[in-house]
Image (tube, rainbow, N blue to C red; front, side, top):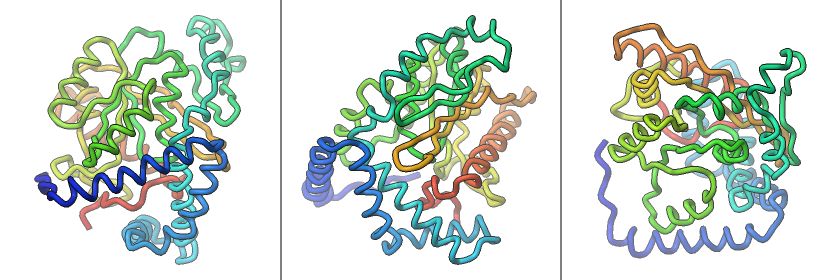
Length: 323
């Protein structure tokens, strides 16, 4: 996809002004308890967001994906989506408060050998922190201790930024593919906020080479798989063709490593539940193209299932489909 060159006005005027607002908001909300900043920006987004022009795209997407829902139900999802996105923004400065040290302490006390010695009914189902609980503990522990490279996929669902932080709390070194913002000042702020949350790899050729190096060294790589890629594969998503990146499946084919799905659900306010699924069953196809297509069909089905369960949690504002 050809990227439009940025103008002098954008680089010299718009970027610094937007960055000043972002840094100012970070300074102010970083001084507040995360519950306050989350609630305040969530309320503001709920009031203002539904009236913004961008909401037309969300409304169009929702009507196409949920034809059985009434207009009132669609509007409720839109208001809830905006509140959720506002809370997500408000939680960014204090995100590390949401996974406190008690999560790390509990995770360190659990080893894979300990889990295997316990009968299934006695294994811990979840680890509970002040704000967040983790479901699928055994999958995190297995990933940490099996000595294998692994892939983890998620989407722009819930507060997805909690996933790399959860990996850090579990003692997992994780790298993640990351689209660098066009605004270089905002990019530096995001990198600052994500310190201690794993290595960030830029998308593109450089990121692809770095991803291969991570897996070759037995590392763990995470990526978001629900964005449109114009040069991707035409894979069904909510019954319509969605251009989907094949990167996850290509890496799984090359390294034959476990692939885990993960998502974050907001229970209420700043209470969250992180789900780490067991490794998915990889396709049996020997041909790479057939393997990649079959796997990405299953990945899109998984993300669709998450979104159908909590439609207010997904980012409906982007152009996921061609229409």
